[in-house]
Length: 435
Image 1 (cartoon, rainbow, N blue to C red):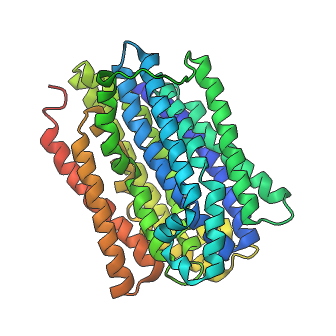
Image 2: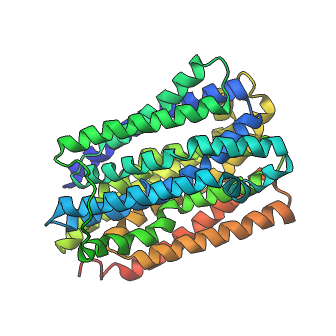
């Protein structure tokens, strides 16, 4: 892939991501105007974080970043390799879903401990988790199929897939007599099934349809697992930090989870549109250049990827910082979502926004590390970020009493610290990447 093809693929991915984000905004607008920042909305944004965090581990985060380079490397017996991954992924996720369905109270107690103070809220949250958790099985299989598509440098369908999710939830919300947790849970599962069917069909047109296998070749799997386990933390570290924020937010005043959720959704817009798009499109090309030891082309892709993600992140950051209140007011100030909700959401949006240049370029750095198989360092970065965020959350909430804004700032400080460490490591590594 030359640089022009790199940008062509990036723009193609970004276009469908943009459409998806627009539908995501419409979904959030419908939910916030119908529910406001009430208990049902708080339960939805907190509990749905649970499958979404594990989705970052098993889905398009860890799985995609570790599987795409392994597919490119596995030139022989590719279908056998993919079937081995598919079989292990399916049964591991199925077992996990069954476990959570049997013990939902345990997971709600861990991820939303503040809900235990209100018995009805805790029971509703537990029931909602049983509705939505099977989604992780469906969407992780979608991510598996997406990684197959990415390895063949086909990015558009997997980028367009979230449109179906958002559209399904909008339809259920608009055409249901009451937007209850049961309705939302049903919509989530229906959306996951539609996404899976679309990607099964498209991947089959590329020459692969998943099948179960009983034969396993450990040599073939070594490359994948050497990347996958460190990727579990690395790919999902931002979501883990947001989840930690949400756990702490469950102890704060009603509305805090919703304010954090909406501000995080706006932060995710440039991350998905630019950071994830460029990192994902660059990954197969970075891997090929390293395998071919083409230092010149590798540096071209690296410079383009790093400079574009950082500058786009900086522009997005300044936009949010200076226009936060106007943006929130324009997007959500209607129905049950009042001016106080606007102001509170704006505060956390600004706190998150300072991290954008570092979050976007860190997404690209992860692709570089996975292409170079520097997985131990990725694991180290994930642990540092998680620990920093956890400690700062406690300090900002319980020492400085900064409320939900302190939670957003903790995520920002952790992101900047990890980015600085990654930059230092990359400079020390630059002469060895293609040698």
